[in-house]
Image 1 (cartoon, rainbow, N blue to C red):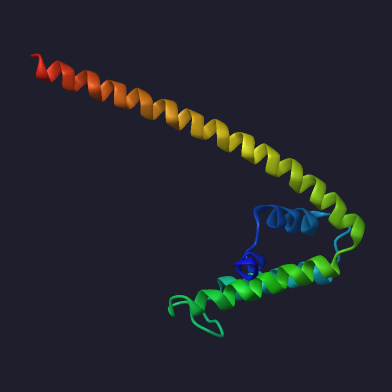
Image 2 (cartoon, rainbow, N blue to C red; image 1 turned 60 degrees about the horizontal axis):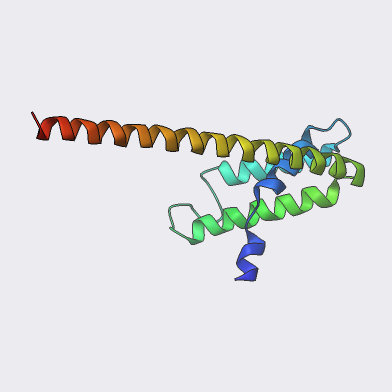
Length: 126
C-alpha cells in the first residue's frame, strides 16, 4: 500500500508546483516541461488510450508524476522553498474554507430536514 501512496499526487505537491511555476525565477525548462506534461496528460492521443479503463489512466498518472518529479528537480531551492511556503498557506486557507462550506451545507440540510418533518406532521394532522 505504501508504493501506491507514493504514486499519488497530493494537493500540497500540486500547489507547490503551481506556485513554483508562477515564480519569476522559475526556469524556462521547468515551465516547458510542465506544459509538455499537461499536454500529454490532456491529449486524447496517448501511448495507451484512456478508453482502456485502468491502464489508460495509469500511464497518464505515471507521466504526470514523472513530470512533477522532474519539475522539482529542475527548480532551484529558493524557488521551491517560497513555493512550499505559499502552498502551505493556501492549503490551510482552503481547509478552513472547506470546513465552513461543510458546516453551512450541514446546517442547510438540518433546516431542510426540520422543514420536511414539520410538513409531514402538518399533513398527518390536517
